[in-house]
Length: 398
Image (cartoon, rainbow, N blue to C red; front, side, top):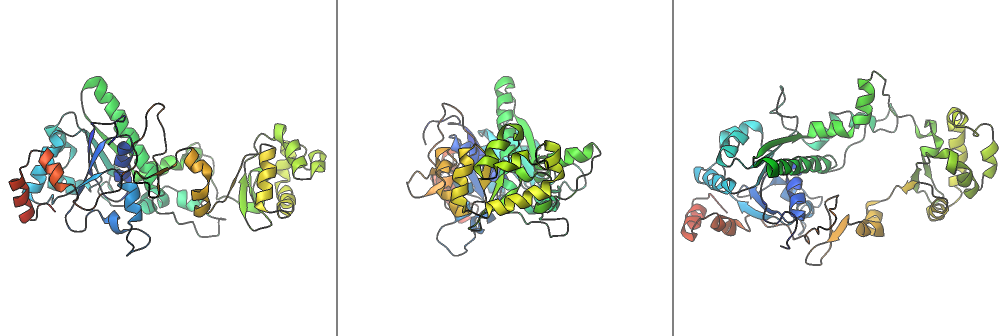
């Protein structure tokens, strides 16, 4: 791999599904050597959870496990856990989301592993945190991040409509970013003190952080109701509208004093500037439904492409409700580094959502097959070819 910020950093990804592993993926984007620990046989269950079973490409796996090396090892076997302990002794970061009782049973807890390596950053990810009655409870982002924290209840068309389901990984990826931040903070602390750290994050805490505006409002004893129907939005200039070709976009025109006259002129309704119903902030708020109805009629008169030109021309902040295909074809996605090509030149992947000036991310490598790097990883840990052969014969590694 190309020399980068984390070149030489050894990370053991002993987690499954998305949030924990994607924190390790972000470390790998900056050059860390990430060893993916998987059970022989099926491996990480995320390998087979792509949207199109039976296809040759494991779509989700390529995203979350790029750049990694795969070690398939049975941690329920004494020789398997001994091998992992040997790897831990020289590792920098250990990432896991195993249930807490499982960690104790397999001798993978922070207490066990940090005794082997006091400089280790032990990154623990759980569904509901590590204290309280539900510390050992399992969860996914749809249940712990999205549903439990009030987000699901808030995201609905109106109070009497069903709440919205989350998209796959929608809570996991930002939660993984939170875990990455904890790891890097601990690495900084280690640079200052020489000591490793136990760092923790959870789906529940990250979900509450995502819903923090509503939560903090309630903490100050203000009511947080469901959002009103679009037609009853309190600010017509921060609402979404449909165009003639049945496309939707959302405006965020908050600097009304400076932008309102130019906006209304650009959309062909300059007379509304002096209309007493809309002439002041208070009047526009009082008559928001009326103004929304007026703008509905205006925006349904042209196609989205025309309105994009008009609104861009007067500096109005807006965003189209893009399809996934449109997001992929958006040149800004590659220009800002959100989408980057795989090292083999075949296709793109979604990059870690941040940059460090003067530091290049590595070119993304394809995710490994199950156990693809078992021999190499064990050999680097000091196992002989005969040792590895015996472990393979015993079913300890694959």
